[in-house]
Length: 280
Image 1 (cartoon, helix red, strand yellow):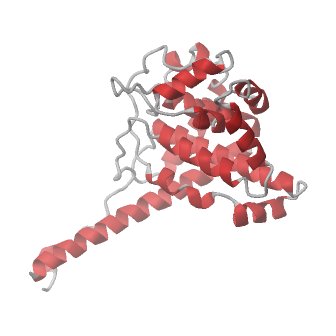
Image 2: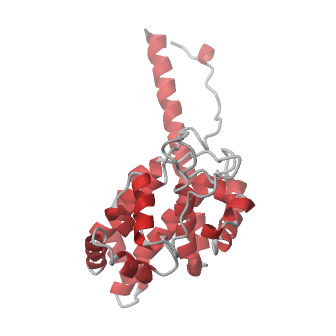
Image 3: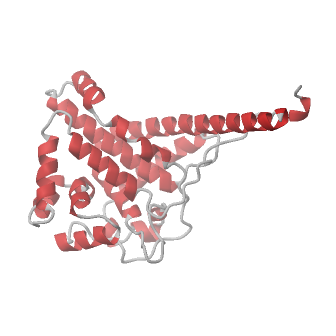
């Protein structure tokens, strides 16, 4: 019985060690991506679209595609729907070199890299909005975001850490050209993925470089318009709660479409305990 209990204790300790390893690595990844994005704020819109386009290749009928990093392949990033996204991908590839240099648990997957870059980009827009509400005062804006922001809503997204990379491009024809698509085409795509007008509206910043223009188009549709107006009103409040929470929820679901998460990813061996030398 004593030996059995010891095995359980060792297994629990090993699990805690792996959780800590993943948490520490994830924190470092977020810091690297935040720094890269802060130095290139003009690339925030294409980073968001890059993450969306990598995700919406998911096909429910074949259970293929999704946020698997396939957009990194030259034959996919060069497709019409991905026009203007190469610079964002290049930035993330440079960040990946730094991340891989300090990773003790192997290279970071492009699938994770792209989605976590989107998270960093979204957070930067939330923070920028808080600073703007404080008249451009960064210190007060940071305090406002810390006090009223949505950082605590990222728990499920942060658990989804361990996506696998595709080994070939995803099939063509699965991603609309957002800037040329009609609202109905956008709605059809989101419906095919299991989403509706609400999620389409909240993801407006991901659908092209000009969020205001995208929302103006979406507002012409009677199904989407109420949600566009809801999130516009929310962004005028101190906390932006409805907008931020719904965006985080939708991004979390999109970023895990069809993915089997490896919850041991980025862990690494530690000194083994030799049970034979333990005194029971």
